[in-house]
Image 1 (tube, rainbow, N blue to C red):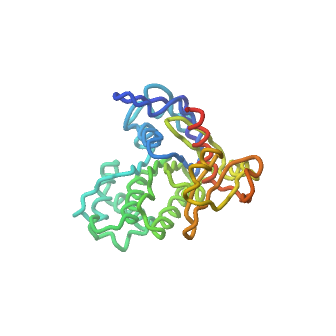
Image 2: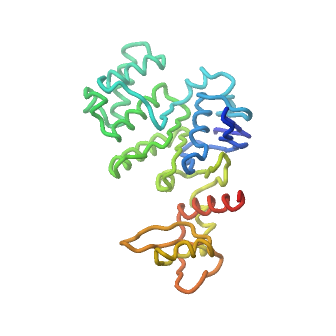
Image 3: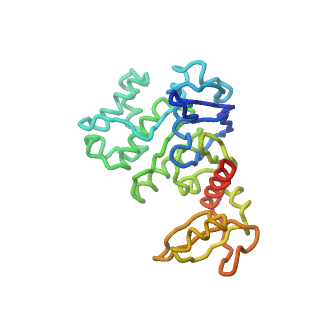
Length: 293
C-alpha cells in the first residue's frame, strides 16, 4: 500500500502544483486522471524522489519514501513522459548499461535479467537493433523494461500511451496489466480509456487537488440515470452550455452530439444514456470549475 498524505508543492514562480494531496494506493493498477497542468507529473516526480514536497508524507508499506532517497530508488521503477536513450546503442546494450547502474554487477546474473526483461516486453527479437530505429510503442516497452530492473515494489508511468497507435497502445496496456498483478503500478494519464480498461482504482486530480477517488465502476454507477444525450446544431452549442451542465461535445459521423448532466430530462429531444468514466471525469472537472469561479 502506498500512502500519500497532505502533499503540497509550490514552485519558485508561485505556481501551487499540489494542494494537500492525500491518496491510498493499493497493490495493482491505479489510474491518476487529470488534464494537462493538473499536477500529475509533479506528484509522480515527488513520489519518485526527483523533487521534494513542501510538506506531507509518502510511505510504501510503512516505509518513509522521503527519508532515504537512495533506498527509495531501489524500490521503484519510473517511466517518465519523456526519457532519453542513446539512439545509436542497441536495446540489449542499453538495458545492460541500466542494469549496471541499478547495481546488477555480476555479469551472469545481469545477462539473465536483461534477457528475461527483453522477452517479457516482447523486444527480444529486436534486441540488436539501435534504439533510434524503434517505434514509439517499442520505445515505451523498452522504458518499462528498464523500469522493471531490480524487481521494484512500485512502478510509476507518466502519460505512457500519448502518441501511440491503437495496436501499440493495446500491447503496452496489456503489458502494464500483467505487471500490475503483483505490485503497485501508478498510471498517470489524461486518456480516460486507459484507466477504464486497466485500473480497479483511480483518482481524478485538477489544479493540484484530488477531486474524486475510488473504483471506476462505482463512480460510473453514481451517474446512472443522470446523463442525457442529444444531437444539436453546432451553432447552438454556446446556448446549451449557458443553460445546461454540458459534460462533453463530440462529432459522430459529422453530427454534433452533447452529453449533459441533469437529475431529470433537461428538455425535449434528450434521451438518457448509460454513463461512462469520461462522463464522470468531465463532470468532476465542471463541478470543480464552478466552485472555483
